[in-house]
Image 1 (cartoon, rainbow, N blue to C red):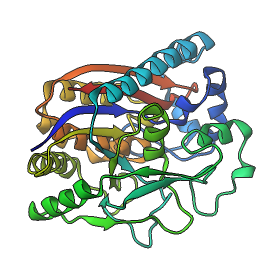
Image 2: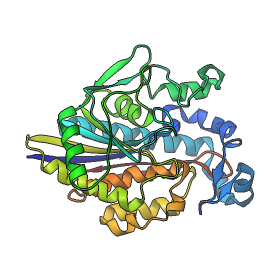
Image 3: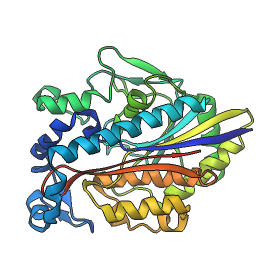
Image 4: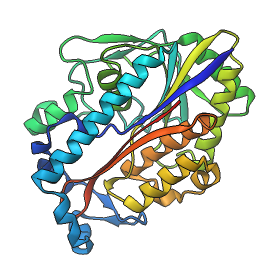
Length: 334
């Protein structure tokens, strides 16, 4: 019988791909991108700046950036070590796709990939029609770290486990989209590339990619659906006929692009307490834009209810006076 023996959660913000000296540069993007208030209402950068807590300015000094970056790098190293020492046969990676591979013409709520491999391409763009060379140099560096530096690489996928998962989830009345290849010329997106580049640099594990449409209405899975999906994934793994040590990895989150420490704290408390009801009841209006990736953690939590949450590292990654940034969180269950 297969068994889930390890769970990991990791943020994958491009802030983690740069040195702390570069973090103030994100204001170039944050000033022009659309934002949300913490209650989900649309906002501009200036709207957020007008109501920002003045104490945030103490969080965006070079010293605070350096401290938060060091803590995040240590947490990433610890996750990679946990993954290596677990000696897994496969890892189910739960991530989102931000119009990198799947677009509005055909956008599945939940998709399980079952190809023999999944490619990671060098210097891929992250939006259709995007021109890499028009980005600021610092942004190019940040994006590049999700992908191979020079030559495409095909990472192993546990196709047998993936197909078992698909069948078992269908039996549990989940409507699952499937794919056994990516579109011609496409490689895996940032949520999965981050896992390969930053957590599996020393020891590659076969993965089963599970895509959740966290970002785009109208078919985002609800928090309840995400949690129940995770529970169903665990049942499916435990029904797998072969012996296998399996991990579950949530990639993304927590709150961004407006940092919401209260929301993040409530999520971490629910994870510690294994309070599935609290996770299922999270307000959907708070799980939009970057914060939508919290759904990946909710799904993983459902699959990891049988394992204790052993450690969590949380850093509210403010980067502008308006309180924009990414709340960086890292966690391990075993």
